[in-house]
Image (cartoon, rainbow, N blue to C red; front, side, top):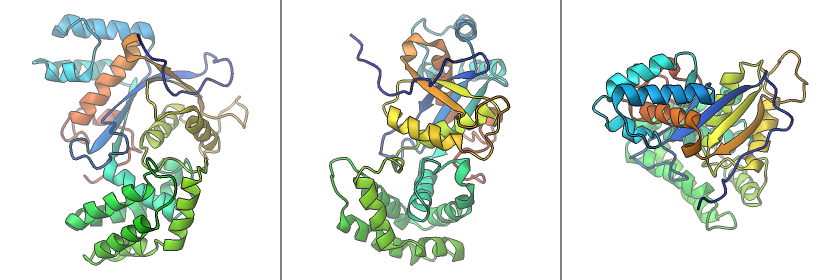
Length: 334
């Protein structure tokens, strides 16, 4: 017996033909365990296909490359002896119909430190809507990765600081630990810009943020949840500032109605959102419908793309590069 699907946000109004419908899935989601070396990145793939088109595509893949008749998953696809040829065929079929949002989890954590501890916390954090903070985050990320073991200790201290599970109030000791490892990291000689960013972190401001976070201030996004900025970028990408987007998504408990409502409000105020014939109060995100991937071939195609993108070496220069969103959360030089 299947359990009820978790998460989602029903469309606010009747969905019209002018709304673009995309199906999404992710690969590499590890909850709040963002420092697992086995999954250093998360990929969020989206496809603009009808159910019939997705069925035809999967049927053709099975016929050409002899995949099993069960639910199509990226692990099965990757293990096939025909994986390379099948991927080339799949990418050709999806040309212009798919996108991949790549999130480097360490870089995501740095954007969280900058966007939440040095700026006003917002659901825009980690997206193109806070691009003015990216140079600071990128400077810290690049310098930190060259700093040796102190870098991992610093990121782990931040994760511990903002982890709300099994803790009901902010922890002063965790805050002091975070600043001690910050000082140790700065002491390794990061260089001017990165050191300046980290020196700007303030204990009292950090404590004020933690107080709001543990008081369940709904204006603060979950600090350890990369799915939200990935989804935001996916919607903004397909919208192009002109179209509204309805998302069909594989079940994902992180995408709760409350969080999605906040995200929808933030995206409504995006500077690039200026569609003709759409009310100014509307958002590019119409709604998000959760589905079971076993029942939706569009989501199965998105799963294939997300899984192959996450596991493909040198994705930034390989055959998947044309599908990669230019606002993916990663160091563009890596």
